[in-house]
Image (cartoon, rainbow, N blue to C red; front, side, top):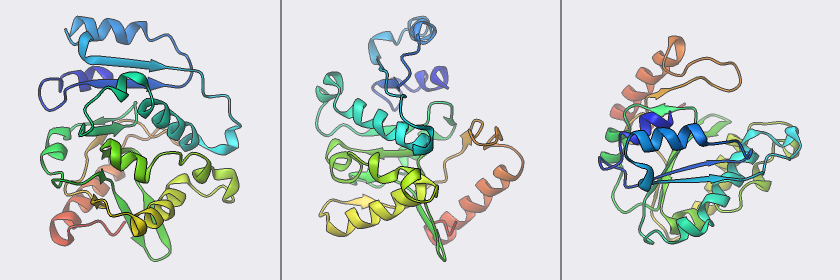
Length: 219
């Protein structure tokens, strides 16, 4: 996925920040960046932050990575109006160009919240924010989305509730539904099924239709 995203540097993206929390050797990724002549436009952030109990859930670790990125000295030097696009590392958002072009102007957080009856979900695979939006809506969420404190319910449900509460008290502009359905290529962690194949491909088409007809996705 990293090699895929390097093709967007200079074509929609100014830089890439690759962050991981295991202290893994990133030599191969450095070599890919150099081979593609984009090394000067890539920031690698690697730290040991994966030593938490597994019952906290994978999203707890992901949230700590995001906090680490946003307070990293290199990222703090980016212009305050920088727009960040976040994708889970193993996924390729193959229509990223379209996602960027259809993002509503002036929003500080661009995310996708879905509800059907009592079922609610905040998509954590892909989203976008400014620094101001991150500080208002996403900073420090790790403890709040721990799955062991919510009877093992998914962190995405906790994030939905958290964002709803923060939206209600913030004057900032946000968009809680994507204009375009992201087409994601990559295997899901829980069952290794690819988001772009089989039933999940049908889900993509169904959601694309809902966005065009309703300006949102029911679920």
